[in-house]
Image (cartoon, rainbow over all chains, first blue to last red; front, side, top):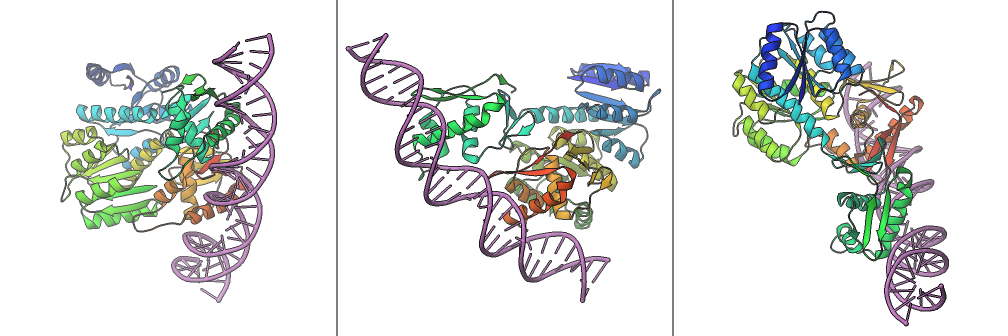
Length: 225
Length: 225
DNA sequence: TCGCCGGTGCGTATCTTGCTGGTGGAGGAC
DNA sequence: GTCCTCCACCAGCAAGATACGCACCGGCGA
């Protein structure tokens, strides 16, 4: 986990950096707004701890610049100013949290854990295959950021194939997982869905291959988690 | 956007709920830990505001129970206790933020915005889609600098679609996040809002697409998050 | 009172679903 | 290599499901 610490008070910066390193984070320190801007633009950090009172460039301006550059790192603001309007402004500018000096080190560490935990949690719900990604939470497919418009039945089949990610799924297994107790589907119906899916997916670099007499599987470069 | 407020002090609960509703959130209120547990288990909320001092069941236990059930809703803890160890404990149990009473309403609202924004994967307070931008801070839409005048219900729906950033949102999810306990909405009503929104948004280059049998999503070039 | 907002009911247009049947190709038997 | 069988594929179709938008009504605030 990589943290950028922006703090002009040398003693405080050193102390914080030492403690955070002791907790296992990789910490880079800069002492003014302009360097913060430059470093944040050049490298990727998971988290930025940002003092508001900075020489060269105000902390809020650093934040604004980062966000306008689509930098998605989490940001914790540190400041001596306690005015509520200040805090609200910082938060609305895109900060994720706010601590007023003097603060408790263990509380800072707890808040860091919260933010890193959230970031980790956000990532894990997508599966990519070929040019297409599947979002587990919304159960929807998208290609290049655009949602794919797929009817329910075909979507169910595609989801199944995605979950088995490139392995062959037998026709019986497909029928089994797409029907309830009292319903049934002809094997031909499955072939029908496959045919329709193929046509729909062709522009997106994803193909459904058939294993003759056995079943179907996805072909395309696996990508993502 | 749906919020669960857990607070045993009746006056405070009423006051907060009124203010939040005034800001356009759907707010449900419960007064003790056991009910909080039950309600959170049964329904989906975008955010839970949780007092720690509760009858029946401690706030931290409610939080623990939620997280162990994989409930991923954002949680803000409210408490009179100011001890740093208390805060650290709350945050490490899975809370996303912590406010000590007495707190500033505008700060609470700012922190709510931060959490909702983060859930949507956004880093700044402005979201652009097609020719329309949404400002999280003022919860208002504008096109080419001019504010758009949209009735409350339609605004809620459009906000939801914006927050999901072009992903498909199921009709059930829409109904869920637009209604509280005792209310309900017909599926037809949603279709109605969509229809009205479409007419309203057409001049501004923004279209609501329907994924038949699944839900709705926004179409238009996404810009800024 | 008027006008706007929120919500329901219903007829119509559109899309999906599952089947049938015909065609073509794969692969085994000889 | 040739033939033959079986399987996969797809066009087309009818029935059913779903979304759409209009008409309309009640409520509330100006």
